[in-house]
Image (cartoon, rainbow over all chains, first blue to last red):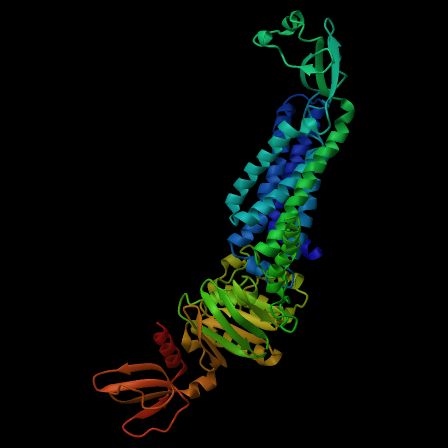
Length: 320
Length: 264
């Protein structure tokens, strides 16, 4: 392992140093702003927030994407994977060193939320060490896989930025609010639904006689305030608000982290699979002992497929 | 056998089969684009063959044609890299190689000349004590003096350590007295595979008056005719021949060129 610490540091020290500095400065500004500091630090906190928002993408673009893409582009993979260390071991070693460093830096960036005054519960959902660590490892894994597929550093960096942004936006906008089914509070006419403190409001509407949501009737649709119309039309018995209670905040944090960690694990698994099979690079320096073969390796994979398809075909025959 | 290729096909290479004994020095010769590098890449395991298989007994080190190396590494870093990335590492062997060819240690790889970079990649390959060393155009960036020196040193490594050496080249003059085996590739097919000494003994050039057929039995490699004269390069092993024909052995270069001309 110390070999890979040495190698990673020797090859990536400038990107490690640069990103670490960025993370430290961002963490400092975010934490300072949180303390309610006045003056220019609020603006600094704003910049800190930008870094925090983009940190996973930064890791993916500057650590993940070039990791394999640079070896392929400059054709140095002959050197990297031509030693006793196998490509899979090489990738595991480097990913372990850079990945754990990315998690630590991500957590650091997530220490402050950059908001002056009272801590906002749901508004600063992404500004926690746990969630930021998940983003960082996800960005890294995404960059590594894209780098392996793209084989060009700049293209891999651009693609990493695009896909990272897409995934983050998709999960933040569509998925995150519904990690757990929303709770609903209902109020009859003349009273308002009573939202618990610090709850995350998801949506509101009207309830019918069975206290379940009903759609707005046609004649009330275009009104600015359909309440009195709905009441007059006797289309609803009251209003409701859906929300996620503040008590779920930490469960959601863990779920967000878990989701991104899971995505990262899937991406890593794919990367190793492509590296082992698609790339065709030698699995080990001694993989072809002449007495142990011949043709054991090429024959193994084609043989596995018919073996899998045979039972399926047999079943099909049996059913037919 | 330390290197075996069995009906290897890949892009430029078609159905190439050969076996090389341990401790042999093999020259892989062919025109540009004849599939030498592809074949070496397959042997080294960097490319999977489309069909057939290639095997190497023991540990292999491969120096590709473009002599890849991390540009930001200092020369000393390369040795450190070799030490940390290999189970077996002979630091002295690599270090001696660099000293012998006077490669400056403090420079980065990107600042070295092409020849010096060749020496660094060779040092990394030799330091890992491979059983089989594959070199793709190892001498292309070296000056004439360094070429001889490198060849001599490599042959010493072969005889001292029982290493198997395979190197590709298209400069036939480089292999005289060096290679004891010749693999001749043309257009992806293996034209000649054999012991260089035996090949030289087998091939005889007969020159005489204009004739439509060869004066002796045997496979005619190349026949050339002018108005008054004919010459036949025959792979037969040298039969006695009467006047006015004359017979002589050919050089390795003539042999290679004749086979390539025939294939073209």
